Image (tube, rainbow, N blue to C red; front, side, top):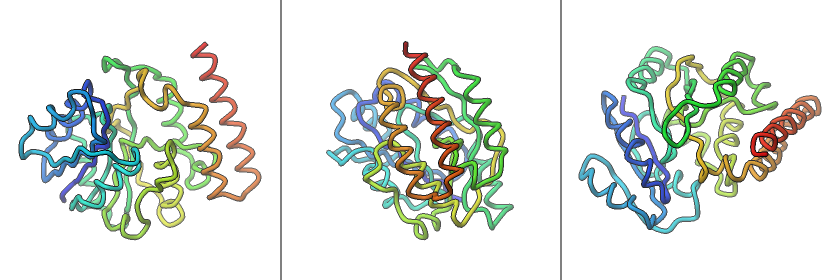
Length: 252
């Protein structure tokens, strides 16, 4: 099975080589497409250095979601995923993902655990990682209406699902992935892998680190578009309030 990975990118020259290398180091048939938004740092020179090993464009776009959709519209793999240009994959995980899809033909999407790392790649927030691992053991879809325990860079889906569900919504700037999972869960439950498939990086310039209040506001708007159960919405609101409060305390 061919796995295609889309990398939306903009001025992440410090990290993008590790992202690309973590894909090219995987075994099997692999396709890499970088949708760069016209970076002004060293990103383009890094992309050029890979020659024919990757596909890429660097041009002005309408933001991250536009870049993701551009890539998904061009890649040709049986299995697709996207990973941001500051995250990276763990060694050998593509074969694990292939095995799940090959042995479970009814499975449409696979997700797993992830390390949370800082700018230097050092693991942080182990408590958050443990909490999300516990949440993923709870029944779907209702846990997804309360909170989003799905780790975006550790998630893969069949290309046929893109044809069925469509692309990501470009009016979502922070929760395009959460909206997508909520659209998929109407029809298919995810296959959960317990091991970490990727490393999710948090740093000073990441959206989640700088704009968490806007992110949680959009998160609330997104879940209300998909869920009408007042009990689940109540729990979601309480959960968001607690998490935002913790963020405020940590950022002091």
